[in-house]
Image (cartoon, rainbow, N blue to C red):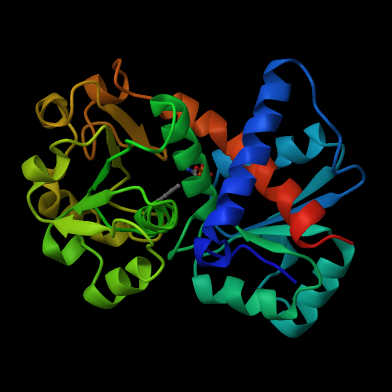
Length: 307
Ligand code: CP
Ligand code: NVA
């Protein structure tokens, strides 16, 4: 059975296929059409952390496609009420697909071992593959193609950066991470990410000014991810030089666009004038969660795991 726990699970060709399905379905949606290729399918959402975009986009896309969803919070007792070897095979025998947002990535990996339906990672401490699919779809729309894309990610090399690096390496898009060395990927992680690159490899630099030069996409995420709240004060101090503000954006290529997975903290990783200004494409990027994930679910259920 095929699962999508990270973008290591998808080849470059499969990512292109997911994006093609998502783009076609977006076009249909814009024209007022909602093809029902997932009729009667039931999508479960098992979430251990808060969410707006991920939850609402998955719950909406399955309805557009003729199916339905179940949101499953802490009351179902995952990890507390009964062991995983009972919980997961039973729950996944009811469902057609399960999206999990978990505190620990290893719990999603363990769930996949017992699962009877495809699992999609809806964010863990390690990766956020659905976000990266929407991100690259947005870059493609903004620039017309990925051929001349050059992306700089500024700030904490976290779950979002991890998935962004994988999608860039798979699709041969140059990516530079700029962060203080202790917030960069360690050398083993960088080697792992770069092991899938067939074109340019992800690079890292501590210098934000040279890091953004020549890039047409500037991307950041929060400095303090969910679960790291106790470190917030230190993180704000350590990353202060890496804020995306008008001055830093001006160092990037002419017409460079700004992306952020959201939610954002204005005044920390990005200033209000940038995220609310003309360079920002964050609303389009968030909207694309719906379309990219629709492509993913249709591909996963109707092509990769055909019944
Ligand atoms: N970007 C993202 O995953 O948003 P939510 O946490 O609101 O789902
Ligand atoms: N890095 C952030 C992303 C939220 C969508 C977090 O994990 O909290």
